[in-house]
Image (cartoon, rainbow, N blue to C red):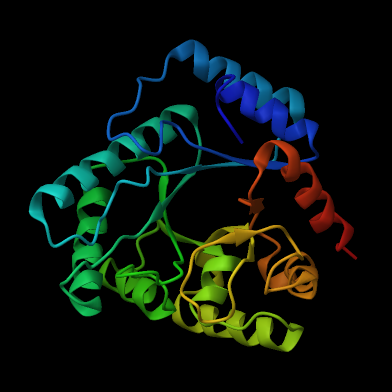
Length: 271
């Protein structure tokens, strides 16, 4: 939800369209430096959560970060930016901050994953409070995180740190080649996720259909049921007890006019 009317405004607008969980940016996603959050903003935010009985709130890190970059300057700037994000997140009392894990550029997947793991270790050592939530990726360009093994390796490098978690994006994993279009297919993917990462690490799900077919490695979100994933996958998603602990967020296009409809479509699938 947009924070153009403040963090409290995002919560209230989310509640108005039927949400019981909301994702926000704590700063502009296209700027390195975020604004300082004032105590009055925090107070209004918590008042809105209490008034609306909002169940969960998640933040998303800025798009400029690349925690897998082979460029030392970009890498350092990215680590600092994520620490700042986690600091803002903690000030607001939000438990998790989602991050796109980054691109290996020309260094290769293995080197990119190694750099990511080291970056995450540094961020954990230099921050406190809110958790890191690595997002599964579509694999576009040189992005890493499109294989569960990438995130599993980072968890292993950081010895399963209690503040290191994962957010699954349905569009991304489908674009990466994980076929979730049938209950059997979705179950197989969850089994693989559980084996490599662990469903106990899953703190949230981005429910997005895909504009492109399975394995396309293109990150293009579509409205629920209108894309190549199709409606049945989301029926399984909202009814699967193994992931019932993870709040579901929509990041579909045309937020102002279609978020309410996409939330309604998901709710209509609940048994």
